[in-house]
Image 1 (cartoon, rainbow, N blue to C red):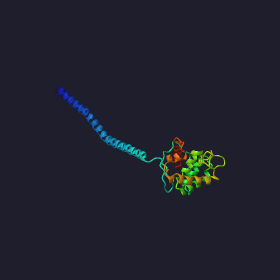
Image 2 (image 1 turned 45 degrees about the horizontal axis):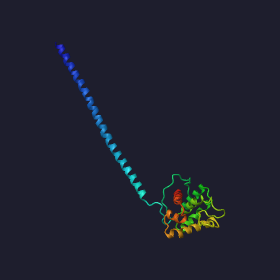
Image 3 (image 1 turned 90 degrees about the vertical axis):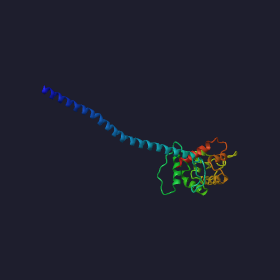
Image 4 (image 1 turned 60 degrees about the vertical axis):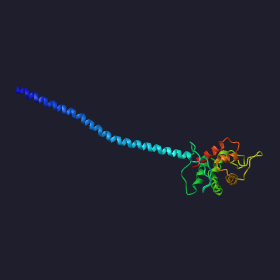
Length: 226
């Protein structure tokens, strides 16, 4: 009888210990989950706030870009400025530029990339552009629009810009240098000085029959020369 009581007491004690151990496991597990939650939650909140801020900043930048004037010409130290969307594809232009005027190198490499006979006259284009306060890209862009950079012109005319076209024919120049000088001067005196300050306005006088493609093309070609 005494032995039975001892065994019964021992069994109850062991059951109590097992019950205590079983009950302690969920508590430990809960503490671990709470610790993980408290660690991950701040990181998640900080990441979400940063992502929202980044998206907001990008949206503001895009709205600012849309608000900027497009296709506007204005005189500056380097000449007329044209703001236009860049084309989806750009010609291959090397980034190696020496001590010479970087603008001349940009024009030269652009002309070389199209195998244009104007390539040796890049310096003349920059000189004339500065002389008459034009954007250094404007003359080249018009030549691209009008004659595929002098590849499609009346033989011996040196007129890459469709300048002086009339019912009797097209005006001719004695050389490419002469053409660059005369067209640059004409754009300054007959267009810019008379208030034609956008590519669209220049188009209305330069080629009034255009449906808008002339201005679009000139702006796109200028965008390629960056």
